[in-house]
Length: 147
Image (cartoon, rainbow, N blue to C red; front, side, top):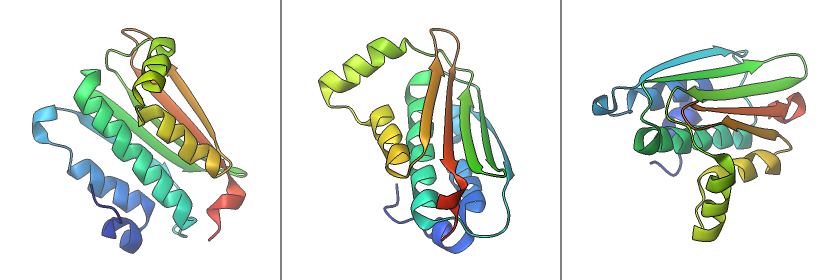
């Protein structure tokens, strides 16, 4: 993955997400939907990069492990907050076991996502269970959206 994605710099987050979706290998057979409702104004560059990196990691995990057929992405800027969610219909996992394994093996996936979010003052929420898919919900205060 690019260290500094040009699509993000040039086009902004929504279009960079669309470009990233186009790079998902066809053999993954993932159907990805993306809905967004944010103004044409650019977001804080750190926030844009955090969301982009989180999505890269999430898509990588979904392709490798989830056995999903559908991924739904939503990015919404509302009155006081920016909301981003990633939901797949894959096999899910036991979150308790996963966090233990990630901690023991030095894995970075979900821990890295959560750290990116909290460093910018946001909240990270994970919902999953065996055979229930995975939903990640991220919320940032609107103040971080102004560059």
